[in-house]
Amino acid sequence: MSRSAMPFSSSPPSAEQRGGKGARRSGWPLLPATQVAPHESVASRETGHPAYSQSLPREARSAEVARRLVRTALTVWGLESLVEDATLVITELVANAVDHSRLPSIRVIVSRPSSHEVRVGVVDRSRTVPLLRTDVDGDRLRGRGLVLVDALTEAWGTELYRWGKQVWAELRDEGEGSE
Image (cartoon, rainbow, N blue to C red; front, top):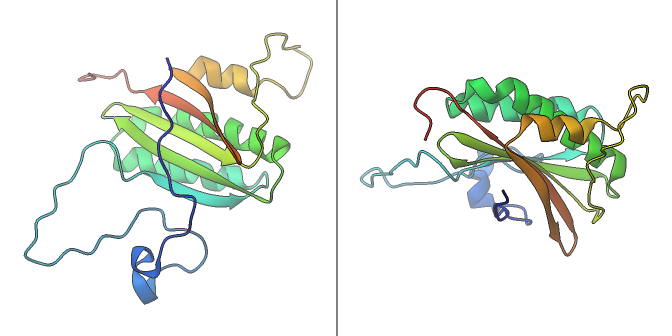
């Protein structure tokens, strides 16, 4: 099962989108800011945008920040049952990007394609597609990450871009009331 990539902006948000003078100056915001006149009503969407995303240094310690981002998004969306698997998956995706990417930063994305499904992804500037290793040696210390990702997710894959790629994985909440 494959889905098209979730769109995201590759350019920094404007000062208005960042929330003006009081906004964070280091990195992109986690959610887009929206200004609404007091008399206007805003309808909330249960699924889809906004997605959570954050640019991080291409360092092993970024996995901790990525896990926190995933945990926050899933908690806000009421999908706490996916936290354990999703944080393990994002850790593996970040580790792959840290090991195999070229430039000093990566971008972590957490989106919600449906009310009971979440997509986590890591964007980097390498066009090297990760491969699922089927010859996993039990004595090796490394090389099992995508085997775990494959076992824990509904689907995973790679979206290639002219300048790099996004490796993504989708998890589904199979709890009571799922679609």
